[in-house]
Length: 537
Ligand code: 16G
Ligand code: MG
Image (tube, rainbow, N blue to C red; front, side, top):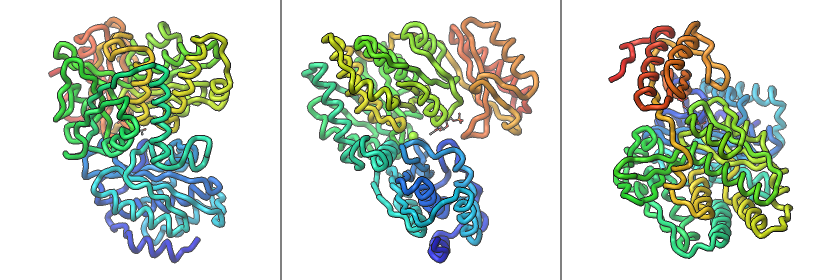
């Protein structure tokens, strides 16, 4: 390592003496942009080390704070196959980001020796950033970190998070596609066009799209140049307003109404992305009432479709869906009984779902909040690509599956690609969003937050569906749940906020609400609640 170059970079991106501690969590680093300069330089250093550790494979570094407000920013690293950074390296990221300037060289040497990194290996880092004003400067800091360690930098400029995942994958696996943003656009456009042709559609599909005033707007405009004979997309919150302010997937999901500047009229098919375009949700209004099609609905639509294609083509594929405890109970029931697809449950956080999805030939995973994708194993891709079906129906089903494998960004949840997947399935099955919504009815549910002195006293097991501490809480929840019909409730400490989250669902809205408030009260009583005891408004 060129220690002098590291010292110089540290001098250019000084860590303030009183710098706040930052942790690399489920979504990387995320905090106020103005305290991230030294952190980003160090993330650049870490990306270069990671690349060498992986034999010179390209590593991604995305500068974004997703659905957070504009003044925030953050960074996340992407591993060689386009997956999220391996968990064991999160601790290195945190250590490197928080050490003092004069400890930096020592910390780097520790990582080099602990991981047995050969510093003669070449290193490559793919940089991307969302539309935040702070992004350019933070990218420069990251670049300085990469360069200090002698890594080559590929700067994609303003791109979606999933595009960084895609380019990283392509650089390390040429079979996946052309490693450029244009390559991404062309791949998705060609796949959608193939589906369009299969469906024999002639008129345009019309959509209203809320882009959260983020990067989704920039990239959708480019993609639509390829798709304008098939899709008519009216864009709202396309960058002219403030990022994520009263718009975007997180806002729509939490508020349960349309974003600012956009009306969902009768018959309108509406879509919303988050700030870095890795989450997507659909919504519409029926008789003036807002109706959301969330990640569980997308999973159900995709899993059922793939299952039906496999059956039609007599293709033996082991298809599974991965959900979290937040998945609506009726979506789970639909998948298991009507669609005939097994369902697994993991802890909250995309990396857990993604990892589990790899257990299947075809793993469909979505969090209810709209983050997810479909992954096809190598064996499944081989089967799909080599299978020959005798019947016309089977041939069509195989053609549909092949196009799907090209259309879906299998590296990570991707709002653009997921939206095109939904459109493709609706198109091929001649379904409206109303038909999609009619697949099952959601059980009414309620989420609440409880403030307690130390949320780490709440411990969970069984994919967060049961709590093991504090003593007596789980049995209290069990007693409450018994009093309601089709009811379920769980509590877990949040990974992103200083609260304990409560989820409850039951047959009626009133029951779900009553149960949620009762469980929240028990958490407050038994886990050291602070402030007022939770009570229904
Ligand atoms: C993070 C996760 C998201 C999860 C959320 C839960 C990623 C990229 N993001 O934003 O998947 O739903 O945390 O937040 O993994 P919570 O722990 O505060 O409920
Ligand atoms: Mg996001």
